[in-house]
Length: 304
Image 1 (cartoon, rainbow, N blue to C red):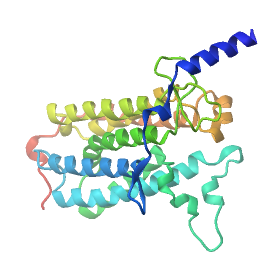
Image 2: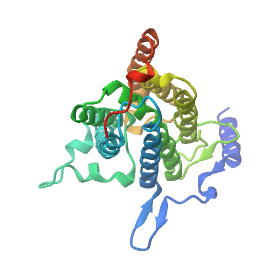
Image 3: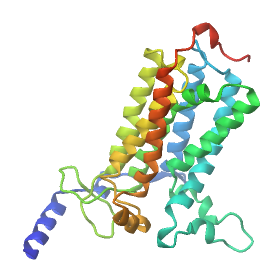
């Protein structure tokens, strides 16, 4: 029986796609510096989101002017980077000790930990990024005197751009691979110490959290009157991104330091963190639909 299982595993491995055969590189070698695609992915998502937000604020019903979009571009970028990195350190580096290692492994005389600053190595938490972006939106809205919920609606439409590019970068890095499988598109990743055929779950995430949500959010904004219902867009996004992440986690290998946590609780850390987001998103959608839509004349752009 054991020999039969080993033979089946060997045959499956022989049929699987080997990641290194794809010829992907982690970055562009500039001679003196390697420009990582991981960094370019975040840059592409932020720049594309800013470009599209600038188009959105020119459409009828915008709660903000271009100057507010400029401020949001700057502060949300900081929120994504700082919040995403701190969130990863807090949620995903604790292991069995429960202590976030990126916070505890300090070099004398340096703050924060050097590991915390190594963005090019990967390790960004979506949930931490969300908190960082919410803080940035709150600051810009308070300083600019604009409506928080409607501003969040406009930001939510653009977030999936960054999600798609980020997950594609995870795939190029050969990281965050999925659980073992025998599907025809299974891949063997060089960073996997077991060398097993696995789900390319990064591509599943890019499709669900990125491409699918991009289509949904753009159609809602440009083809419906969703923008006139405060909270509807951000509610749909919150529920959609959480549901997509919850689904993909069934195919994604839990972080090694949290594998025992997943076995004990039945769900991964990522899934537990998405459940509150799904509840909040659904509640915001119901609230938005229960209230009458805003009139077009009542929601003109803020003064430039």
